Length: 177
Image 1 (cartoon, rainbow, N blue to C red):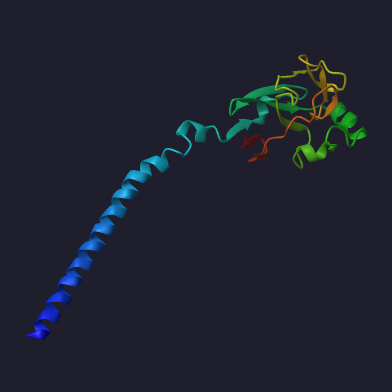
Image 2 (image 1 turned 90 degrees about the vertical axis):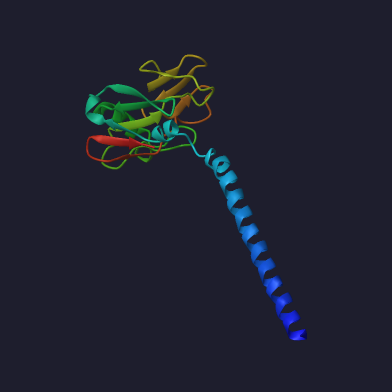
C-alpha cells in the first residue's frame, strides 16, 4: 500500500509540472503576441524605406549644367562639369576643410560628375551655383564660397559640401543611398 501512495504522489507531481510548464508556455506566447506590435511599430514606415535610395538618369544633365534632385527631404546637386572646370580643380589638388582632392570626391571613371548634398555646412541654407568666387556655389545667407568640387574655400562654413553614398549602377544611372 505504501508503493501505491508513492506512485500516486509521483503521478500528481508530474501532472502538476506539466500544468506549470503549459501555463508558462502560454504566458510566453501571450507576451510575445503583446510585444510584437510594440516592437514592430519601431521599424521605419514604408514611405521612409522608399526614400532610402533613389536612382537618377545622368543623361538628363548636360555638360556645364546642374540638376537638383530631392533625396530624403534634402537637395542633392548633380553637376556635369566641363573640362575647363576639371582642369581648374586639378591645379588645386587639396583644398577645403578638411583638405580633399577632387578625385576623392567623385567616382573613378566618372570624375566629370559631382554629386553633393545641397545644404551649406554652416547653417543648412541652400547655396546657389555660379555666383561664388571659386567657380562653384555661394551661400548668400552668410557668405560661404565653395569651389566646383563642393569644397569650402571662403566664409563661415566649417566643412565641405558632403558627398552622399552613391554608386553608378550603369554608365548613365546612379543610385543615391
